[in-house]
Length: 121
Image 1: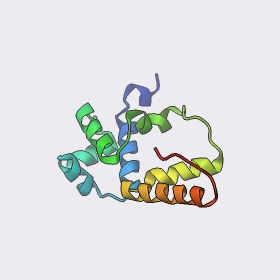
Image 2 (image 1 turned 30 degrees about the horizontal axis):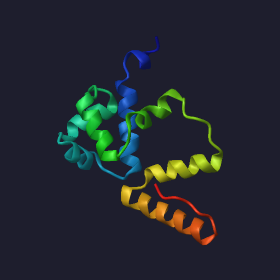
Image 3 (image 1 turned 180 degrees about the horizontal axis):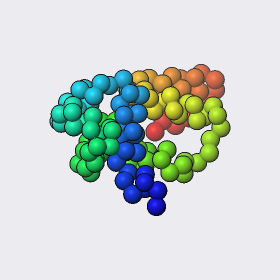
Image 4 (image 1 turned 90 degrees about the horizontal axis):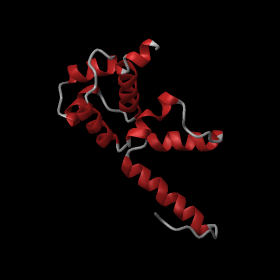
């Protein structure tokens, strides 16, 4: 078993840091949203502290992610996408929820104005 497999804390911490930075949050801001100290979040991100399930679920709620979305990059099991689709999804995931809604509204508008009939979900 590789060291990363036996101790997943550094991988989970790296993912938390990546998500936090993608959404342009400081450690203090994310820690405040989670209800923990900034120093504890720092230790989680570096792998010094293991992330509890409670903390992980708080992070998932804050970033509006499912658990499979959180871990999909680690296992490499995401279905292959074309480069443009993958880039679109990556950029979309980095947007704040209200901006994601604006993008979806725009896409629906473009489809309807070009004669495509799409049902909104």
